Amino acid sequence: MCGMSQPPNNRSSAKPPVRPDASMSLLTHVMDHSLDEGYAEAAARREAEGTSGLPRNLKAKLALAAGLVLAAMVVTLGAAQARIAAPVLAKEREELISRVERADDHADGLEKDIERLRDDVAGRQRAALKQHGGDQGELLALLSGATEVRGPGIKLTVDDAKGASTGNGNGPRESAGFSDTGRLRDRDMQRIVNGLWQAGAEAVAINGQRLTALSAIRAAGDAILVDNKPLVPPYEILAVGDKKRLNTEFQDSVDGQYLHVLQESYGIRYTLSAENEVRLPAASSLTVRTATATAEDPKKGAS
Image (cartoon, rainbow, N blue to C red; front, side, top):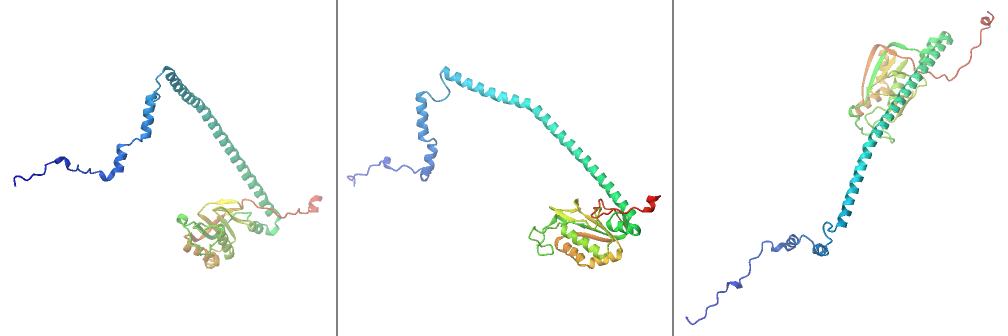
């Protein structure tokens, strides 16, 4: 047993321990060589040639200094020009604002002149209707909207829905031209006014605009125009006539039911009340479509 040879105890033949990141060789390579070898070689070549970093000779340094001075001069000159031009631009802006304000004042003055002349023409027309209307002059002035009216009647206040929510599009306002919303439309106002006339109204006004036989209710976008004058909701509709008959017959009419459907389906809000007295102004302007000169009285001419 003593003659048997023992295996040599050589620890150097043991395998080295495995690195924990051995399975991430690609990531390890990227971390160890973050700079691409091509970039490193180019940097080393420039370093060997003396072309890397700041210029070393005097001529290159002077050129760099001249470039920096030129850039600083350009920036300084631009800032100075901006500072000089700022008051000029502010002055031009103030002059433009003044011109706009003067133009607005001039337009307001012209509008007032137009209103004054329109009122003068309307007054002359009303006076002519009263003077040459004979026994029916007052009735003619009333029917044409030339005079102010007051008496018993009803007050109908109509307003858009809260938030103008969109309807289902299957009701009486169904249209392919635009989507139905909770806003009152011109055609809705037309139906309401026609319903009041049919119920026996003798005179009607919307937000102070007196309606005549020639009045037009149209739309401009979402706004309602009465005789080309825009109205703002809520719409207050006053009608002179027998208040009990007007109230009952309008609600029972097709147009009154139409307004009720607008309330139920689209959220249109309205209130209807009978009034002991309502006041309607005269029409702002009357259009004379046919006029003839009256023959002179021979007795007046002889005297």
